[in-house]
Length: 114
Length: 113
Image 1: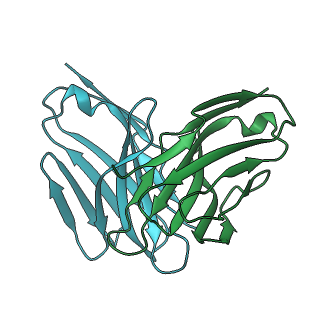
Image 2: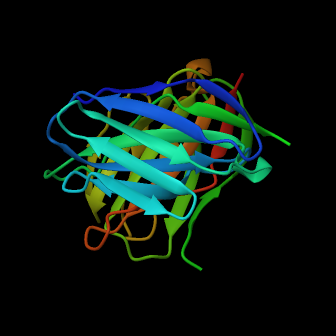
């Protein structure tokens, strides 16, 4: 089955700096790659996603890049703010079939220091 | 407001006492799923359902049951809970048309003593 590796497990940055989180996946049939933000006491919330027919997607301060050949994708947050502090999860989903299961990375705890 | 709700949010119980965690979504989604989240292991799928009366096992189904009698509801049942089922549980739903975004509930923190 699919395996998703996520690095780093913890990341501490100063407010205003950029943060980058990287993930690799194993299943070449995966074609959907969402990123979730999880704040304390809440469920994961989708912040951005990318499909395998696109190499890059941007939404204000957040961007995701995908390299299908190397099977890795990354989350980039620019001009970080204290409210960006949370746990971030990458995930991958296989195309086709009846299960919309997401295979998650183990998460990155991002701390943005004021 | 589009949302997935779960109840209870917190539950402490004892080994062997049957319990049910409810999940409901108001988005008319066909697909629903349960995950458990454990430190160092991320989120792992327990069961999923493609539609009413259609359910199947995920990666870690042992010790759990589910049912899908109505489209909006997908309860998780622990017939005889054990301490290794102490975890944070999330229900999720996805529309099978459109973006395929998966929406998560707020979580249920279960402790089995």
